[in-house]
Image 1 (spheres, rainbow, N blue to C red):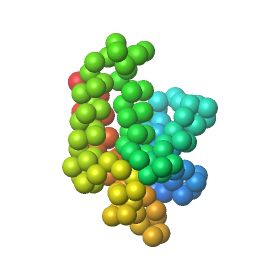
Image 2 (cartoon, helix red, strand yellow; image 1 turned 30 degrees about the vertical axis):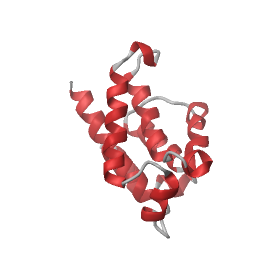
Image 3 (cartoon, rainbow, N blue to C red; image 1 turned 120 degrees about the vertical axis):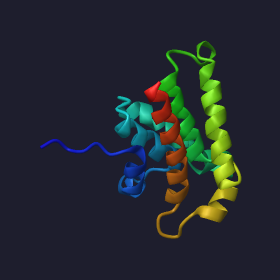
Image 4 (cartoon, rainbow, N blue to C red; image 1 turned 60 degrees about the horizontal axis):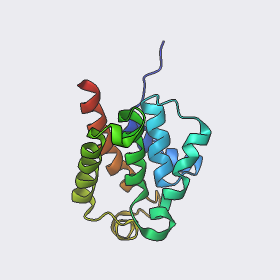
Length: 141
């Protein structure tokens, strides 16, 4: 019997963040790596480390920056300037995330949505829902 593949949001809900002690950006990148078989190695996954906590400064939410990393990996062949469509996908991701969360700044979003038990998982899940929708739509094209 084959094992059912989990979706991005199912992986986030399963508690990947707490199981592996990952920040929000790392969680989005690693969960996407699993869900979409992105074939990123451990070294590549380390690239998300500094984006957690709004780049450690409460700035742009790490779940959002992680999502942008995923879109870049999946939809850019080599460089951003060679793939103008990535700009549209990023604009869409940012716009939907800001509409849903009411802000882009980690410090403001955490204040409203961080859970005392699961931390930023509700925020990461919202980013994951938006990201999964964009990816699944684009992969159908």
